[in-house]
Image 1 (spheres, helix red, strand yellow):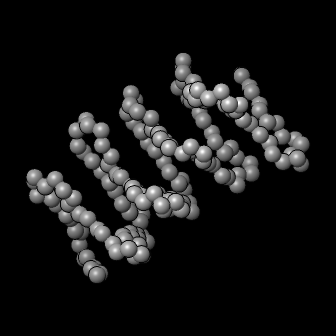
Image 2: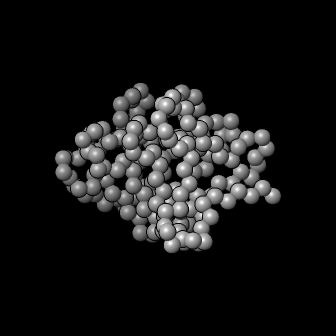
Length: 173
């Protein structure tokens, strides 16, 4: 089905509705279920805005993306591609709140975070603590009780030709 709107359309739920207000279900093996294209997005315009003004203090997710099929091992729950500008920007303003980014991984043999960069002259990961007083800029902690041999931190330069490389440089100015 296709529908062309010539003016802004709003879906408003009547009070008392506790189920989904808007739902799209596609058939198996369908292409894109929903596609938003805005070829004329100007300064400060957005293709999609999800906003909540609820003052409810209960724990909740404003957006939930779930791949509820354990056999779909090659699926990616959220893929972001940016050919210009930043890929992801998080602006977390609750000073006494929870972490800005938290990853809860149930992987037992795979990496929880992988950064693969083709950077040649920049810094791949840059951590700046511009207001740090008594905290730490980085903490690496292992709480595993295993008696097996392992490295808590492992720095490597894995190319024999990289003779000018320093594996770890520590500087205190």
